[in-house]
Image 1 (spheres, helix red, strand yellow):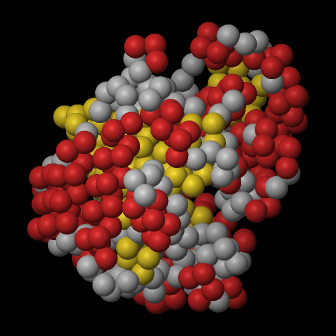
Image 2 (tube, one colour):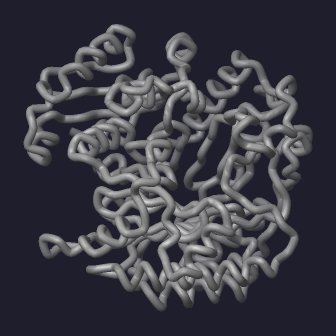
Length: 464
């Protein structure tokens, strides 16, 4: 059962009522449930189990490049702000060593169907360093022709020549950070970026074979209002990105130090934020973009929209993905991977990351091995977050359980949400209503056993 594309419905009353805090579900269980009881030997064991049953999944690779030469005040990423470009050279040597260690333990196919470079700012690397990292990657893995290879780009720090190199090396997708084009907002968050330099990078990507360009925006930043964000959206739409992400700014200065330089009194009030969101949804829908889920939109002919139509959309640590059948290997400081039912996260500081590799050890510091119950709930959350529907018959065929009995408590709770208009609980399916799609996170939280046990939703960002 696959839902047809529908324009999102911005129901202000529903959103105000259910604008609670909750996870983004790029994993389940969420990363805050990882524990130090899972370490490098556990990851090594799962790397060696990939060929069980005679089948191995293709690989997805994530590389975390933590360096930035300036700090954006809104940023919540694991980053290292430095002007010292030489630090990247040492980092690449350790990435090579980590790949060598992981590869030596890896059983089964080394074919890569998906790769993503994130950060930080991946284009902090020089052109020669980009070539060097690709040489390392190809030493240990085989990049599948036609795979999905993406990179996050700061248009202020990349030339047309570098974009050409990225295309030559194999990248075919690009995520371009913008956040907001308004000068007042840019000054408040310490990110000065012109429309012209952004357009130049997007034009270069298209000239060099990139199949898809995504633009990242944030709403809820200081001094934003409906008029300013509307102007930014008009400027972005003129660039015609294939995908667009509109993230909600979560002001958590006690957790993320750069945010302490943002004055909370300059942030738009809750009502203003809702008006901004409603305007943005209306404008993007009118421009022909399909609502994928949460904060993502895509052109109807984009592969992400096509994957959703075909029931093949997926969520992982990079957000929505068109590749659901991969084992994810994370390389670099703080990187997270998932091999089979096991999550593993690397050390979060350079010092600890380097020290582990100097001991010839995988730099894993925590992780989590999913139980069967976790895997069942993970599958439910994936289906509802990506496709807004869950078919009991199809689920039972894969998992060999009686869905209505196993999830009786959750179904009873969803019937309460049905009365609110968020979903419909049918005899053999759960369907999120069109108004409820904006609040899918609220509904899938019902299936989060870890959250139900701890009732710690308040530590997460707001869902809208």
